[in-house]
Length: 158
Image (tube, rainbow, N blue to C red):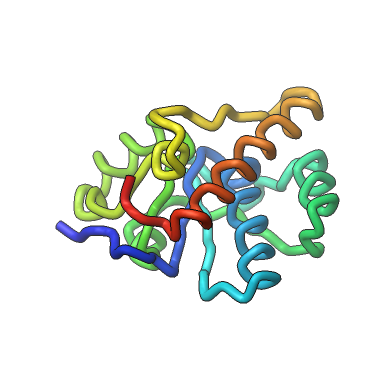
């Protein structure tokens, strides 16, 4: 079984459709890493992603307000090949974590619950899809708080 190194450099975020939570974390952390000169690569995928899904407009607006430049995003399904690309796999919910380790047990050692890895316990990042813009803003706040904590900890094991 593989394990997470002390300072992973390739981070994979996982949610359901790969258009809200995981995509937001991917693009925000990529922006922060570039602006802060950090050697991090970010990616994302979803346990039920379809390539035709689109990032909701509230998520795009919120990321733009954070200074994230316009970007193209094509949702990707969580597959063995996609997950193999990463040093650390961060699942947005316990259900996503369970899905990944059940389908791909070889990645158990490098898969973590996002909020737990950030030091906030076994909390899920709730899905804002189909909900009011304020829920997207709340979701972004949780993702930002988590990413900031991860950067302070240099992604060490919880």
